[in-house]
Length: 112
Length: 112
Image 1: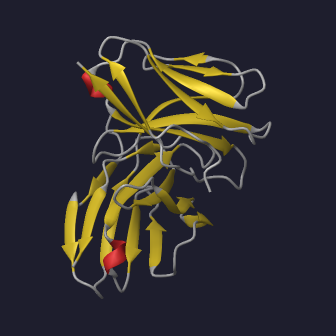
Image 2: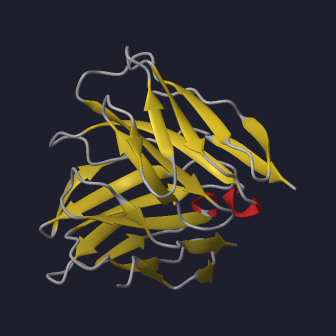
C-alpha cells in the first residue's frame, strides 16, 4: 500500500507556480521522499528526491516540513507541457527496498 | 547518452499465449526493475534484477518471470496470458538496487 496521500487533481495557470502537496505522516527516519511524473502514455519521469533538507534542481523544488510528515513539490513556472500525473513516493534506501510503491498520484492540469 | 529503451512498443496477443518483453538499461546502470501499469492505475512492482538474479519480487504469480543478461539487459516473460494482463509494462534501471530508478517508455500489451 502507498504510504502517501495526494489530492486527486489540481489546476494551475500557465506561467504560475504549481504547488503539489503530499502527506506522508508515517514516514520513517530512513525513508526518502521521491517525486515522479507521468505524461500521458509515457514512462514515469524522475523529478527530484530528498530526505529532510529542501532540494532544488533544474526541474523543481522539494520542500519537506521539519517533522517530515508532509512535503510540497514546486514547479516554479508551469507550462502546458507540465500537465501530467505527479506521484509522491516514500522509499527507504536499504537492501530490502528496491521497489517503488506508486499511489494514484495527482493529476495536474496546466491551463492557458 | 541513450536512456532506458524497451521493445516492442506495442504488442497484441491472445489468451493463453506467451510474451517476451525486452529492456536495455541506461548506460552505466546494472539494475533493472519491471512494473505493470493497468489503465488508470499507478505502476505496480513486478520484480527487480541485479547481478543476473531476481533479488526482490512483488505480488505477481509465477507466470511472470524474468532474466537479466551479463550486459545488464533484461527480459520479462509472461506465460498463459490472461485478459487482465493487458497493461503498460515499464522497465526502470538504476546504478545499484538502492539508487534512483529511471524509466523507459514502456511496452503496451493488449491481450484479446
